[in-house]
Image 1 (cartoon, helix red, strand yellow):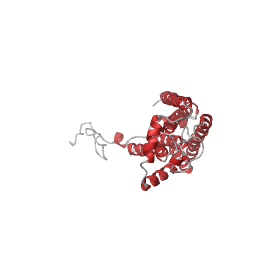
Image 2 (tube, one colour):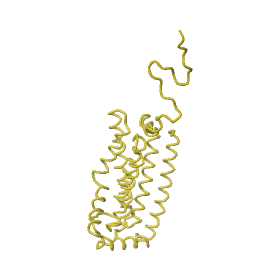
Image 3 (tube, rainbow, N blue to C red):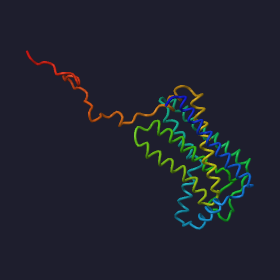
Image 4 (cartoon, one colour):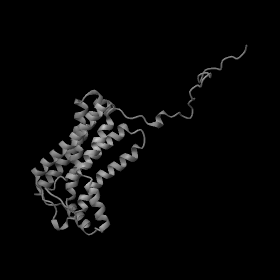
Length: 254
């Protein structure tokens, strides 16, 4: 994909996600933080379906959506984009900065909106701060987007499976916040939309303003082994002492 096309696609994605996030945020602010019907329904269902094994699994999964794990993942994804040691370090730093600045921006929005969390008696894990948008959700979604980008651009095979696993992880971390009772569903939806807008904006900026080698990394896909395999009607390369494929056999007469 060309540089301009990549920037346009990323910018359009960011604008769409920001627009949807703004709508959700206005609904939350307009209702003074009160939960919507879908929020109450999902929290009620979650509170009534919490076997010990499921709660333990949800706590373990939700823990991966914050702290060192997301930063380690985006750093590894960034390193995969570079060709040399210097490029890998620079790309890893850019990806870490994208996540860190996104968390700071999300924290600012959270403080501005100041939506209360669900009632404490419904919590099945520890939580602090305001509720909208969900921090774990935003962090894991941005992380998943960065990792998926690196997989698509650099993984020579198994891309679909890796992208599916990464995407499911990013989505499930958000859903555990609702299941554990520390966020309303609209907090999680807001986190997904915020992450989409932030990642799209960062990608657009990276393609427009970062060095050429970084842009090349973001716009060049790794070759698919299937693309380089011989097609059924393709002749194999000529061996030593053999005529090239398609050329008439040389005369062997004395």
